[in-house]
Length: 640
Image (cartoon, rainbow, N blue to C red):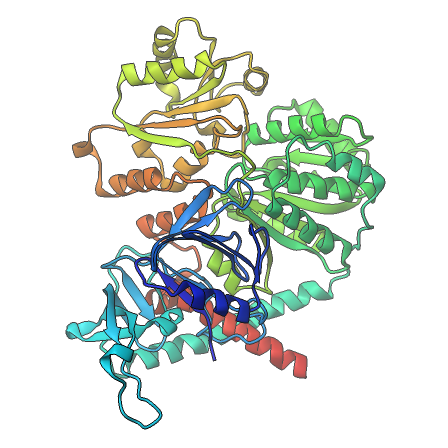
């Protein structure tokens, strides 16, 4: 039977009973929570680090009412995200041991009044609120208890087709999730009590069993491949990791340990490192690359842009300067002759780590002994590139880095088909970027630039049109006459652009007027003000990626998104701008990914057939049913 503690904002709780239940569930009471299975109670604050959560929870209480529920960083104690309803599972019993579609993949039921929801047993309806009902349990003699002995319990109220209502008691909240389909059409509500929902579920379950079989077949084929088992960490590995200038976050360390365990196993690695912009995925990749080189294996690092290739080359070369490791780069920043030399040395095994764009996937590039492939933002590569990457997966261990994934519950549903590490804790002392949507106002822009330059910082001014970017740069020079201003865009010669980017990295340029060449991964710690002209022209995920270019230090960073007047904006543009302003907290990348999919639709993200299944039963239940099918098939395979 499914057992959990359920907390709802506004709910009345008996804190003594909650503490007793947590202890029965196997949680340990401490003064401050740091790891799963701990809880702490201080005055009107209850902190819990539930089983299988990425970060602990904080419940703000007022006497016996829950005022707010937040996730928080256990090191800085800073709130990270907010929740409406949360489920806390027992710590002593792993929910992985028995899985069914009634076990939630997501511990949060973040629904608001008016949202469409899916009840596992009744289908799609609309959430209209939370209502208290008086429980009427009977005593031992079979007679209902007196009113004074009765208790009240919160119920979710869900409206179905023709106005029928379903009242879901607190202990059944795990059966309800927000309806997400990633299409722009409104959900089609079901009729309570008829057979349509059961028939829909059965049809989807049947198809998902075939998909699960395909996933497990792919996994089985990979498992049969003879991979290379890397050695345990060397002394040099420890020395190299000690050169990291920051304190690692718990998630960074866990992702590193997961990766090393994969590499030391004879089974080929295929691990996704999933984390928000600036959360330290590159450091995990760098440590894996160093480990591979220590076993005399070569490493290929594939990135989507020339600028990012340059940045990685600069950072890797700097960190590896005291070790006998040769780093090469293949991109248009290198002349034909230089590229030819790097290709030759790579094939001879003289280059240990090669960083490059899709140029790395060209037919003339061959490795003497490739051991690890690191792919940064795989979704940004084209179909032809992805075919070549499939080939790489058969030859070497593979690590993929991403900041804007398909929502993580999908990966949880496909657990066993691909390994994943989530980095959700922000670096220590990191502050959220203050985000403002503004009209084109020279006074605001001038003040923003002045404030940044007065503290000896740098500014990104993004204007994504090459035809008049020099005019914009001249206007910026008039607003900041003392500043060193430079222009950077993708139509420049490789040498000139490389020279400008290196000067900006070395803080020899104050303001970089540029196009979206800076979008992916570029990290300039002193650049902490971003101004994006005509932000209405960008997608939501793009705006979040761009905002991630600032806020890399422990200083307050600012992002200004310049847009035309509201009446000139489309409805979708308004939704995007509202979402980017709303989701400005640390770690909001996952929320952004969800909202972006809902605003623009998922397109062919999962293929037409899977897309239809998600529309008919909702994304969360699709994931639960797929995971259930995978689990059943795994058990059947173990029994054979």
